[in-house]
Image (tube, rainbow, N blue to C red):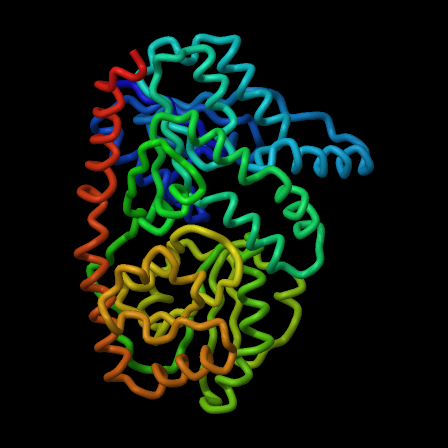
Length: 406
């Protein structure tokens, strides 16, 4: 079987964002069973990434990067595109991908198309028009309707807030219409599956486990009181989370544990965050090997106020056996199936959030018991072979045999 994966990003080993990491691991393992072709827009990032890929994936970069326009043109174009195409892929990239599907033979020998990330979802119309008998699956890493609603409501006044408010006009109806034109949908949790069903999605929905690297050794959970945050810092939801934590929670922790330390690990932290001094805080920027940071930490924080979908950073901390203090948004998609006591502190209240951190930092036995519970649960429930690859291939096989497309 040959599968064409259409994605905004070309994944490669060592990619710094969670969605790209998942896609790389997913394609690497699924390539043992299918031929992998990737169609992606030609961007500077994708050109660099294509030089790092392995020979088990065939990369097709298409289109030309646009000539830079005036600031006024870019502002008007971005605003208009946010209304017309609220799922987020720049119009020039979407047009280039659509033209390739329409004017080349990229679909000629393809048995199935998988649209990675909701940004590529509008392409289902072009695929169905050109090759109506090819099954199309959309992989919804996040539910755009939920994510955009939260960003429009929760972010401070900024360009991003304005754009998300514009997207609100059409995102729900657009996402619902396009998903119902697909033959299958993949999501990361039963929570997201229920959300899509409540939105009116009639397409078959499958839940797959995220790609979690389960380390051989769990964190020791002894030594210095170190809190850890891991996340790409050029993502708005991460910078907002860290800024909120530093402003309203971290001072409360230091009032009770003066020697506590916080390490913020992730690529591309904003310059303003780097320049501002916070007591006992280290901001590292990009780190290739995160293992030492997980091993020395006493707990992880995930103070997320916006965003959607399962948070990989929370699952990865759990895999190391690290206690996690988080918000309802940080825990969603995970906590609904948790054994009792797995997340004793899920809160958006700064006082309670700080109290959870202090409770773990002051009690080594408590954090070890909780950490062991988390790690055991991850090992049992996040087998990538059984809960992701096997389920994906089952959906592929089912759609291939379906009489609806033939």
